[in-house]
Image 1: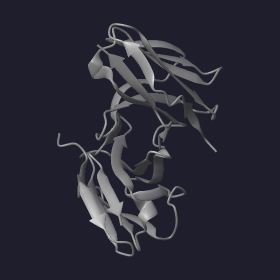
Image 2: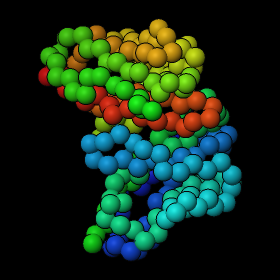
Image 3: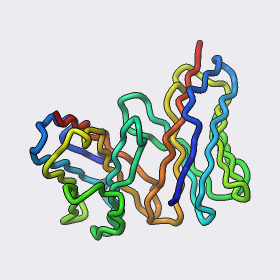
Image 4: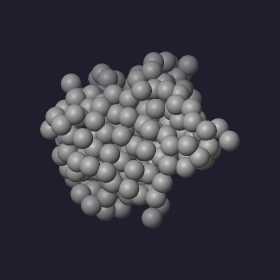
Length: 111
Length: 112
């Protein structure tokens, strides 16, 4: 059973702080890792993806991957109230196969 | 790019009725996925197609659920007969080898 685990939260941070979202996965053969953001009542939208160990930065977002520990994280710098949403971690074994999603972490950024 | 198009946006039906959800993937995407989302179980994969061929339907709850993809631009998910426990948001998503997964706006299904 391939599983993706996330802390459901809610994670509450003040505006301007760094939000750290974490995810672990069970399938050691997983190759691609994704972070999606989902606002209440909306569909998930892709924020970032990462394939290799280490960090990948895109604006205020940094994805971190550690395959040895089967751990992937998302850091959001200078958090804004508009970042308040549920963040979904997703993993797939190889290209062309389906993404397996965690249940998501709810982030609340207070102004 | 119109994105993944799903219809209807909302469906309210009575237990025992047939429900058909529709999806048009992004043009050029060769993989199509049906997911179901509930508060309790999160986002669950039901079935996915590559090049119109069903690859993995192990997530389909039971025989009441069926999915088809008659061509590259259209897919349906059918529930017959529907039950209250089928109430959820159903998402269709598509991707290709060069484009990651994009979701449609979803269909919110309520079975009373």
